[in-house]
Length: 239
Image 1 (tube, rainbow, N blue to C red):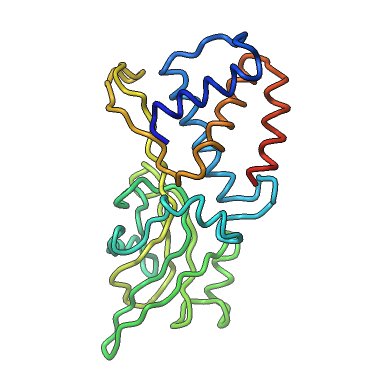
Image 2 (cartoon, rainbow, N blue to C red; image 1 turned 90 degrees about the horizontal axis):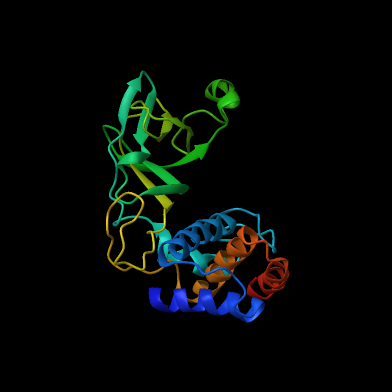
């Protein structure tokens, strides 16, 4: 749907329920609600806070819902890690090609004298990492390399920290990106910039679902219990 269609659907949804009794929303307010709704939709699909209690890539619909936001090679080139201490590599997630939201998968390219290996990274909780590095079944090996995520060295975001004595030359990260911000255009945003028109980045079939979430947010703000009830019923249909 175009941004104009999204705004029309938003107004139509609320007007049908409340017979034009809702307070009018200007384009900037509708854009704000659509952007908030889009991020809520993405987070619901990545986690299990949805009607089906199913996460990303557990159902074909989930895969199709977020397919446009999944970034992997070659869109995201290999990243050269930084050695921050002996046996610890850092991959700064603020340096990704597109704005990083959530990690899906990662693997390291390990270069030895006789060969080059592609070794999967295995998430290990912070309170388990020291024990894992001593455990022959969980420590760094050619089968997998332990990692966790924490604040980056620049204190500007998060990084992947990889615990390995091997020679890691590059790391591949596959992730869900932040969706682009929608804008009706032709007005100055709160940052003072006038952005060009842009629509939702998610797949076309998700647009009405996102508009419904935006309308629910609007109804909650305007204390419209009727629309909230209808939205809950429509969520079951969408799922």
